[in-house]
Length: 212
Image (cartoon, rainbow, N blue to C red):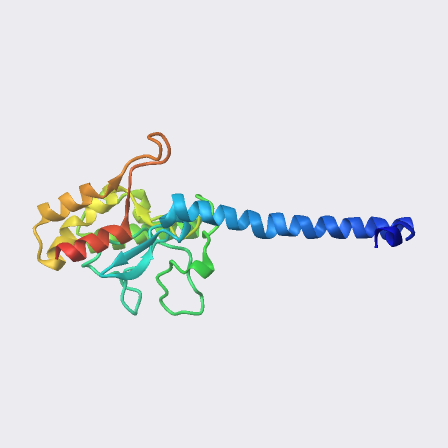
């Protein structure tokens, strides 16, 4: 066979060499490398490699990387749950969609001086203040602004603390116990220097349900 190929024209031999290289690289980079990386991920980082899933009562209820809306069928926030920040990931075909739809991840793309955004923030501030029973001036920024992805799972400790009395009242719990639970779920800066202290809303709500 090799003697036959040597008699083939140069362009044919070049194409055969290219085909062999393609097959070898396909096996190495398309099969072997992904399997090795997947194996390393499963051994060293099994939770992250499988989507950072969050479980409650033995059931998967979400991911620690994706926020969720805690609202009723009309999109109204439920007082017994800690609420996430607003989400622009809204399905326009669903009436009163509260957001956090991964298929529509994204921001509003409105600039800080946009009058529509300014009015939206003002309306959100008034609604959050009334819902939590606090002065409008004390509402933190993440309670009225959406994240760039619309799927942010975290809120600031200030926003979580603002909601303590409302959640405790709705569940008939001691506010001090709820506040202690919030403090226990504060995550510090990544590597001690990146980002801000934060609280994962899904994980906090699982804990508050167990406390109840």
